[in-house]
Length: 308
Image (cartoon, rainbow, N blue to C red):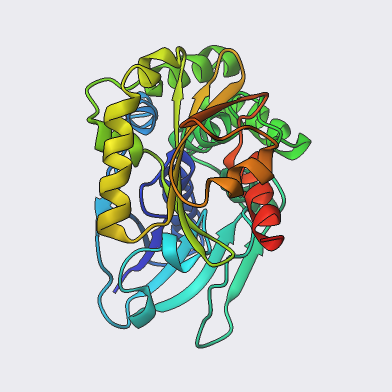
């Protein structure tokens, strides 16, 4: 039975491309590994897969009992593929905070404070002196440019930049030109419904005793989303009622102006007020310079919740 390599639910480009990259590394090292996904592929990731002519991973929504699995780009149980509790978790490759995942046995964990899991995977190829296929280099590059928003995110490190430049050489693309085209391909709402927008690139978190969902959609014009705000808020209410969240936040991130409008529904709104020092009497706040959920949203909410 093959080892499954899988990212988180509601996968982004890093989740999909790091799974493909790490599965390729494992295969080159003589292991029977295959990348899978546990959610739909977004427009940005489709652009990268199409550009480098790679098929999207097989959709697996629930693991079978005793299935061996490697997690990439996440380590929190709430973000993991269904059935993980009955499977055999072998490894975690990640760049996020630790979120309380417990395991029955010791396992290999490789985490680094970098902007993207793909940076870690790329360096594992080079550290093991394994030749990287051109298409895998292109996918790992795509993930880095996505997660760092073309180096604009505060999560971006020199390691990410060094890896991206090397990967661009292997993939045979002009880094900024390709990256901007990919980001633009994934930006905007397209034909997404309000419910789909509310759950775009969504991740569940616990802030103190409150269960929260934080989503993010990248755009070149925030009015494209804000004009639909009433319908999106209604969808957020539906999610809260059905899935038991106390509060939902949607980051509407402008990749050109480098800012985020944070739309929110639920309680306690005071959590958001304390985290960002803003008046939350409305249903959204403007956050200049905010691009990263991992570094500029979640830590602030976590710290605010600790003071409740």
